[in-house]
Length: 410
Image (cartoon, rainbow, N blue to C red; front, side, top):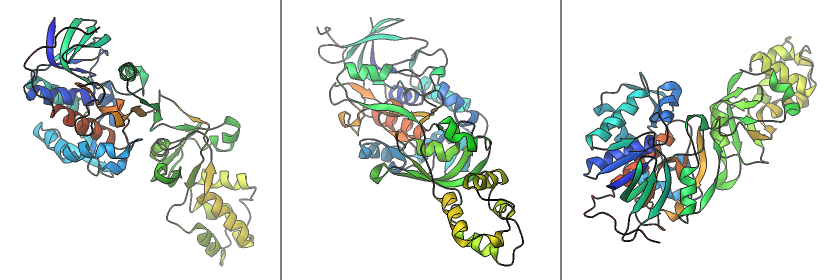
């Protein structure tokens, strides 16, 4: 039976990075993944160019039932640390928006970089390889029944990811293992996902599909309140774009969204000022401030005549129009679900993990890193930074074993 210092289950961003660091620290490492292709989520991210980190990442950009948990790992492995690794491998990149860094060429470069780091550490890889069962053993360590045979390991890292995008191999394996070994799970739900609305209620806006504009969107209250200034995209079924993907991580069923379609503008005053000496129609005036389709749809929704001269409009009617546009409240009936979600919110409860090492407080030698953990980043490279930081915190805490695990427990 083969014995390893460390087995990492999951060859995505966190798993690859953890395995590479641990191998270079002198551990005998095996990396296992059930998918036939390596790191598919990296491959498809950022439109194929991988938004691999965000220069501005701080703990404030992450959600968790235990918000302080991510601070230690993020402080000890920063975006600048990962940028240094990218530079070491000669990968050209650029900043696109709000600190988001993308490869100039292809996300495949990040995958190959991680593979090379694993090779530098002598990491053995088995893929595709499934894990049917895991048992703890007396004296510490684990025994794994895999499709490539049974093996033993002193330490076990679960980097199996979340439930998002099942078509590329997402599964609940890590969550099921955590439950089996006594861990609490924060209920998983889709995050960074388009939101949908009742078809009948959305009908007045369905023709706006494809329209995009900058907005302020918010929802929730207290520590669970989210507020973003981003671009909003209308679709046939609802809303998407960065604004909605961001706010979806905060949205809970039954909550309404508040949307300001004219951010950083006193719209009521602008409309009242337009009355002075203007012979233009209301619709034409509003089209100066908004995309034409949006202006027409909004006037129709409020029963206001687009052809009416703005000079004849009452101030209270213009005030109502402005209020509707800057304090639009609407209640989603759901989301596009796991197939469209970029990440999972929820996961293994971090109150049962060490914030220093990501090690289980219940099962010595067991670690959970990356998306399987209840830490979810904003859109824009933050979730990759959590993958790197949690992997580094885990791998740097490990030392090579001096002996193999002993007799299997009952």
